Image 1 (tube, helix red, strand yellow):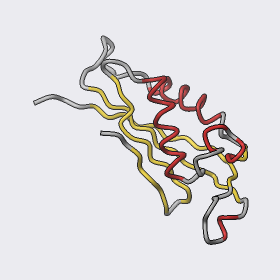
Image 2 (cartoon, one colour; image 1 turned 90 degrees about the vertical axis):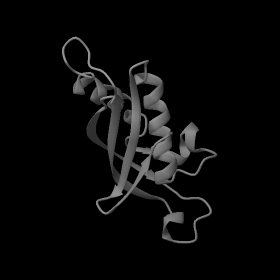
Image 3 (cartoon, rainbow, N blue to C red; image 1 turned 45 degrees about the horizontal axis):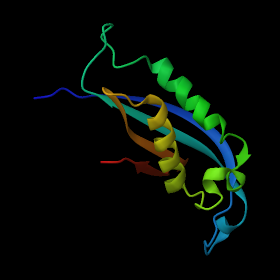
Length: 126
């Protein structure tokens, strides 16, 4: 049986967006204090007995979310065509973090994005 390790960090950022083609209040500009949970998965440990240092996951995640923090998402390149829904933001974070963190032993496993404290989306690729 193969061992699997899943590391998770939690961070947050604030941004505004307008949902295009939405039949309700969210079609007007509004903001969220997003909470993002980033899961990294691996099947082996390094020489120090770790998958990787939590601070490295946090730093890479901060660098990615910095581009979203305190911005109007509709103005940003990834969301000029794709509606800046929680689903699309989670997928964007997953792809960006995968480019920066994935290697032969470590992969982004999932991104859970909380729009409010009672509503979230979890994005993964299998």
